[in-house]
Image 1 (cartoon, one colour):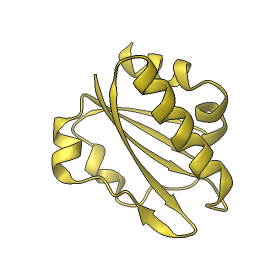
Image 2 (cartoon, rainbow, N blue to C red):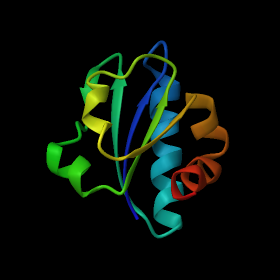
Image 3 (tube, rainbow, N blue to C red):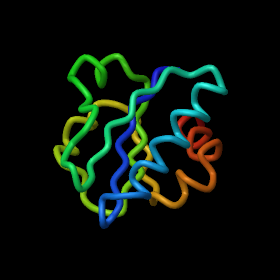
Length: 99
């Protein structure tokens, strides 16, 4: 499965990157391709392109704040979860996308 994701916590520091790392590591271990955009204190990093999104079978928005340009994900299946859920149960978050 091709997945795109956005992570963003309220302060935009540690949890944003922890969630991204957990999603990346878990998705790869399950045989999925994933690209994660972070929206944090440094702004948008690893920004998802239109091509990334159009090729994805689903999106994970692991955020505690409003996602910048969320309308990009309107045409694909999207799962929204708190950042902590992506950190503590990334396998469960990916399963929600598959289900």
